[in-house]
View (cartoon, each protein chain N blue to C red):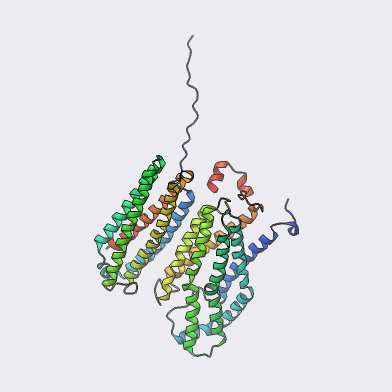
Length: 256
Length: 197
């Protein structure tokens, strides 16, 4: 029998998890459908074309980024839950604090700069087209080109998972962190190219990366959910999920 | 009266099959192979569209340097396989020697790769000089990053082998699986960039 929500000791964890899912959904809808900054605009646009781009998506950019400025802080919930998960591991707390600080700092170039630059460009449509192009470049380059700032954070999470003896996350997810970290490096050439697969909207620098990041995000949200279900507020190994605990030991071994 | 002797029923032999090392590492192997397959598909698509330009740029590559690098990396795969076998047999000193040998062949590969890059840059072939060399530098550089991680993995393996209290055959095999993946990816890169004309 489940406890009423007000008595559930996992209440805050569930709030954080639902807030994280809400944030990622909101982020996808706003970036892809409302503001149209994803997939990114063409990197080779001239100043005049950039001015037209801002005019074309004017309302979407204003509404979308207004929502992001109001609700984007919810991104902190997923970072907080991941930090909590590392604290629940058998590893030093230094991993959790390093991850928390790195991701908080990385969110500034990797997430906020594009919102500020595009909003500034949208609010001043009569400005010199050269300046509009500067904001356009700054927005997309800061978003795509600085993905590498998340690299060390992913590697810290990976190392914590591989060293952990409390089985908070399966080891394969540790290795998946490495796959994600390696694709984050691949975005760097977008600083150099205006066209082609390595430009900021290119097949390799953007499409493959986003595909990997999408899988990675979906997986870690599911694993965070499982962690909350398994949480016993102790300090030893996390118990298995109730469903898995009923299965044969051999299957359990494989699953872990 | 005849007595029929019947053999006591033997329990069915169940052979437990398992993949070498942690099964979790195979998620990395499969996922990373899929990502590289996507990179190769993009390369082959653009190569088919601009075949003449790609062939002209490709002719600048020194095949013998690629062959030597491949031999060095294949030999390192052989020595890491030996390392797994000797560790399995409990001959840890030999296993440590094999791990160092693997690292040595890895360093030789690194040296050859850097020499190849320097040679191409001297010829005027850089990351921005042509489409082919964009892929050449990208694929070889991302593979190089995998190789650098491989040295960290070899460090873990040596740490495991160096202390009797922490020797884990599973981790030794997991490290070897990573190293083989680096080798496997290189063979595909070598075939696509150097051999396929």
